[in-house]
Image (cartoon, rainbow, N blue to C red; front, side, top):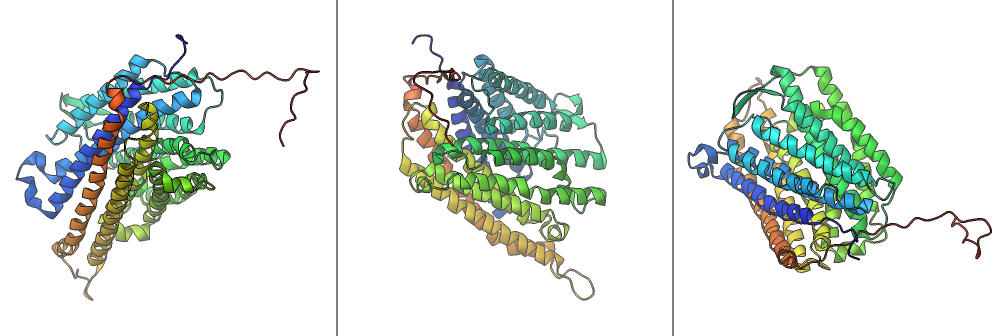
Length: 492
């Protein structure tokens, strides 16, 4: 069949490898800055090695380089398989890959050198932001063009989440990065004071909502049924959760600014919508877990399924924790403590990383033309290193946050603080050492994954794998009257 249509998996293989490598880079940065909190001398009095400059590099590398590459790669994979069609505009898709990698390298080099807007999750200066905008629009064009020429009329729910993720992130990126450039490496935002803070956390919160939640839910809704080897537990419930999440998440961002100069009613609105978020969040987690109902044996034999199940448990846990932390009375204890760090990494290492790793492990053999990963044993070792590292990390940070929060609010009868800030730092130092150990375990697992992927890609590196044919759906004609033999009766 010389003219048979095949899937365009080359760009997916590139994103697959990039995601794994960026995972190692981002986690290595995280381990280094965690070491600096235990041994501050590790900054060697060098500005670009200081904690304040490397921490945003760590978050940017994990969210946008690792997470972004995983999202784009799986998005291109899923939209082809669910639409039974080859990826549209192949050259533009290749530009998306190289453009995104270029933007990530530029951002991660310039942030430690001090070229930054000093905005959480939006540090790069305007020149890099322009490149990101061009790449993102190209990404959207490829995705929606592929969706438009699909052969399956119904749009599977995973593509709804990918579409929302692409549109919302474009909106967030443009609005939050409206600046006045004064040189090639410096700009100032058009917003000022409390408005700037509110716009920044509208962006920051919804970057979590649509980049780290909607995008990775898209992965979950495609790869979990595949690994469970049975349909989604409730397709209708997945659509309800989609519209509930999209409708509610946008309005909860002000819970990041509790006890600030933001108007009190705005803070209360953020708290109320944060509690409403429990419904779609727990609903999606339950839908994913119930999909394994009847096939739990897959979790025992399939490491990718192990990652996915634990990711869903972490998603339920971290979203419940986030809604509780948005309650003002709870926030008064956890505010500015390491409890917030624990919450973020419960979601990042537990939900985002584990669903991404599970999905990449599920996708890799198919994209690389192999029946399975090079080493299933290495996948299991990776799972346990990641899981133990995650538990040590979040338990140590919960303990550190609770210790500091209780010490900061303890007062004498005359109203003076019992403990100084320095006392609290000394008290939580052992937890920082434990956190560092947990991070080393997670990083070790990621290094094993890169080795496993590299070995699995042996044939792809030699360019000897065969392209996968697109299954062309056949038209099913309505039965004609007086058909011989008569059509089978409809089920049910």
